Length: 427
Image 1 (cartoon, one colour):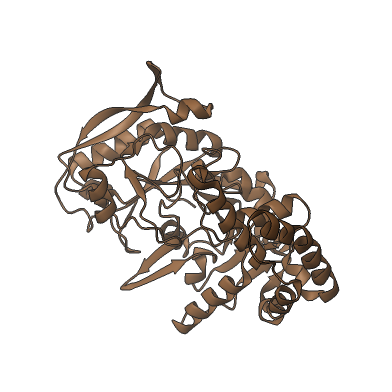
Image 2 (image 1 turned 45 degrees about the vertical axis):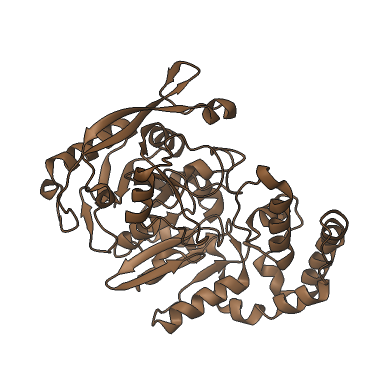
């Protein structure tokens, strides 16, 4: 059975958690393949709301084996805290598998992340300050610490001391901060070993055997396409590859194993942090989208910037991910607008541009070209089929599908697990 990839088709926060949870009854494994606790997924089950930051959303489905892949960076304190929180609410987390090749976030990564952002001032990226970028930097520089290092005290000590030899110089001499004692970091991280050991696994082997056994594997990305370090709005991006290609390296499976790539697409557009955002609304409509949509970051707690739907971005996500389907979320938030603008192209220096410009300066100066679609006032949260949606809501969905370049196979009409219209099966 081939694998499925679930990716954000905008700047993240599109509702990937709900999509993963919806598929939970049909899949056997759910794998986080990149990012860290800088991502946040919200899942609503009945009257219960679960905010997940590092754990795969599939952990809420009892028949699913949740996996944290080698491409993820893990803050062990956050991981254990999140597991304990779910256990206290009666969720069984014992099936979790964690790759021994995943890299660990340490206190010095978090400190460097925060002081670097402050040092940048107006040029800051808008990171979460959770140490994600510095951890990936150490990984690429081949001085990172991996989960498996927790179980060899000698190697762990050598790596921590070597890392802090340079990083304390930066903290003290450049940023005027106190040095971080290596022995304290070592003591803390050795204390995590016994707690994490029950979850440790060769996840690439586990997933390969699962696929050979005809199991369904869902690969779940954090953030979104426009935050990809290679394909996003660089430098205002994350430090990993949320796009579909990142699923192969971050989970350790070959591209020929992937059959479907599902893009999660919000019915409007949001963004957290700095960077260009052509359809951003700084008026009453933007505030209404923020209020009605509950647009506050699950992980950061920051208000999300809001704007109208951007079809240029959606087409780009279809192209770079090879999307086969869309899951359109939060259609219900648009209820009540008489007219709904949709960005169909950009104007850049007097030219109409219908594809995302690869040039950073062009994208910064892009102005949205809108087409206006008629809105609807009817409550759609109880709709169970596409035919039960108001005609104008149906037309809006069809227009977005045509503009975006892939079929919309599911529609979110409310935050609840059961408030979804399934048009086509993903599996």
